[in-house]
Structure formats: structure tokens, C-alpha cells
Length: 141
Image (cartoon, rainbow, N blue to C red):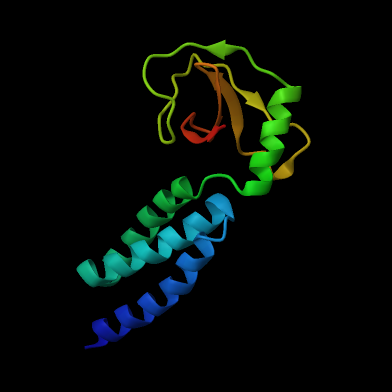
């Protein structure tokens, strides 16, 4: 019975967190929403340990789904026009979640603290934003 009450409380809290993830706050909102949803699912399936594991996994997945905030996306679009990069040709589609090889040259966003953890590259004539590991988190259109 306690597990059901805890799961119900977590579900109520998750609703407010997932609403935040939808308000275009990018990766931060996605991480919070993903963590909340993952914790709820984990608690239902695996109890307290499942909640902890589900929260971590959901947070990582939610951050990936969150992407870049609209204001930052606009900044990036202007930045790459002013600071063009050479395009590299790779096989396959340029999609969010794809891991770029280490041979791709990355460029930093200077003068923008919110983007200090990200870099950009130009792949198959499309600009992409990558995280520290080289995984595409945003394709700039």
C-alpha cells in the first residue's frame, strides 16, 4: 500500500516536471522531466532502487530529448553564419543522437556562457551542435 501511495505522489510531481520540460527550456527541462518520469516508472517496477535507477536513466534521456532552448538556437544560427566551418562528408544521416567520429573538427561558441558545454560542426553541409562526447544534440536548420 505504501508503494502505491508513493507512486501516486511521484506521478503527481512528475506531471508538473513534465510540463516544465515542454516549456522550451531545452536540455535542463528535458532532464528534469525525464528524471521524474524515469523515477516514477522505476518505482512502480522496482521499488526504491528502481526509482533511483529510473531517475538517472530518465534524466539522461530527457536531456537528450530537450535539445537547445529557442533563444540559444537563434543565437547559434547567427553565430555559424558569422563563424562558418568547413563541411566534412560522412556516410549516413545527420540526426539527433548520432555519434560523430573523432576525426570531425569541432568549433566552440565563444562569448556565450550558456553554450560553453557544447560545440558545433558542419557535417554534410548541415550545422550540428554536439555535446562533449561528440553526440549530436541539435541539427541547425
